[in-house]
Image 1 (spheres, rainbow, N blue to C red):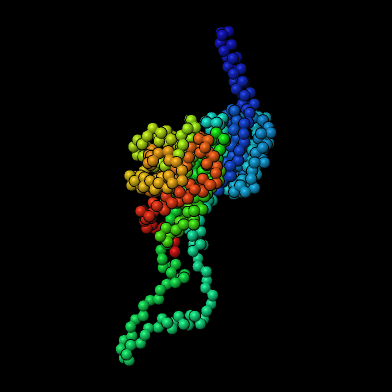
Image 2: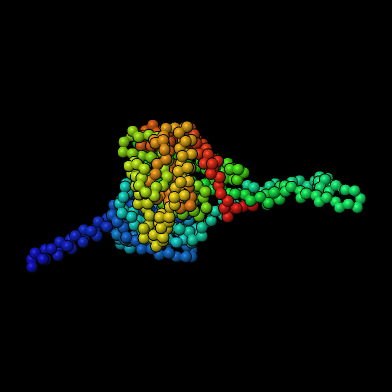
Length: 442
């Protein structure tokens, strides 16, 4: 009996100790990630936090009660971390609403669909409490690309020239035959200006560029502190500029970035975005890393339905496929499994086209830098599994190699590599012209 009483009292002590630890949780970092798709607020702590959320529609704001913690300077830092250009968050307020409960109020610029969830420790992160704020009204990226194309193709209105118009009309009159004979029918005048644009079907070629990692997920970090997510975004911007200035057989090209700033995009959403804009190609851009600083050179990967083409390719795919865990995917989201289902829809035709694209790009990359492998490798990369879009993953260099880390930070090398990737795209289309699609602009 005495032993049982001691055990019970010990249990009480343990419970009190756990409560004390929760009340005294240390906030390690607070972060705000603004993005057009959604804005994220992250609170990282050494102990898991519990939260309850309340959404108020007018004016739009999200209130979150964080339990087991008292207000401290680290939490107050959130107020100053909101940027004026955040498309979703107008401001953040924090206060002690009750003993051991901190209320955080996110004032919003628009209506949202919030997701509040926790993440267990992974990689360099401890426990995270995450608020993902998704706008209920989102602009259609495909419509934006087409509108941009139409704006660029609108011809300038020619100056009024009555005399010129009269001369043109006279020139179009059919020549007379002998009297009483039937006049020959004049050919239809050639369409010019706006008429020509209206008569022609103009194929808009869309290249989806996918800068790897982002936001909560820094990707690989070089020995000098360079973050993969930063250098690949800069490279994607350079390649985007080249694509937007290029046409293929008279057809306009447009680049679409799965992320255009420093925010996290889940792997399945990257694929989903490319399919939504009906991309002709999907190019995921990364910077490789290994355990030692010795490996060097660029690589290009395509999808494999079977086994990986090498042990290194299998290891690389497994590492890249962990991005969702590091970046912070809400696995409880009701549509996550539905979206992931498309990962099983890859086709042999897509893989064959991806290998052709990878080969063209690899040949051009080899003209400006070293190659890690002279052929396109294959593995089961989740981000390459769009069933209807030729897709490759480019490892620009080994960021874990000090010399290549310096090259990745060099404007000269980034310019050379962006030009090589552009030539690879053009080389692919020269042998594999884009097919006619229902998506057209006039």
